[in-house]
Image (cartoon, rainbow, N blue to C red; front, side, top):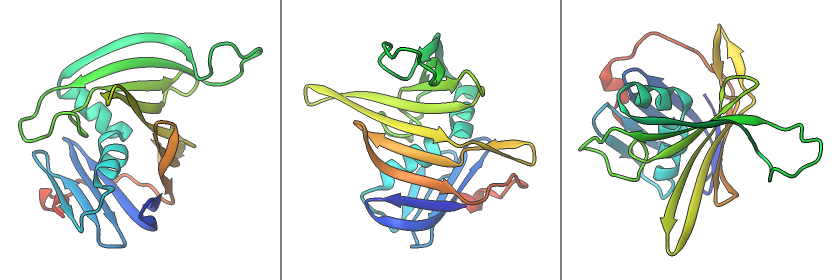
Length: 195
């Protein structure tokens, strides 16, 4: 449970992730985006549906690791990547281990959208936690870069949760989710992942 802010304004929202890949986003304005393992469904759709689904559900660390577990191609690109231009004297920032991932094709999902797009995954070498998920698309003669950043991780009952999720599109912040509470609970029935 937390607060989401995007072009539609600020509101309270809840994210639920459950193996083997059920996903749910619901907010207090009646918007719902769900994935029941085979199809994405929405209620009270808005222009921000794709952004919400991609950054808060498909790119959420648990979802990424569930995707990796179900197949596709995962390749380690290397370690000790810096988050600056590589020229900062006395650099004391983050170092990342990077992976490239191409998910297994699912006939019910659209290529190039959440759960069906190639992504780059950055793991913070200090904490071992996911720091960034990035897509790079060639569009209109240039590149479009979308990032989902996971910051301020906290531990609740032995489980780690991102305290802040930030979406950047070509370097401009377009979405923020600030976690207010997080928990691990019993499995929900598949019907809970319908809008």
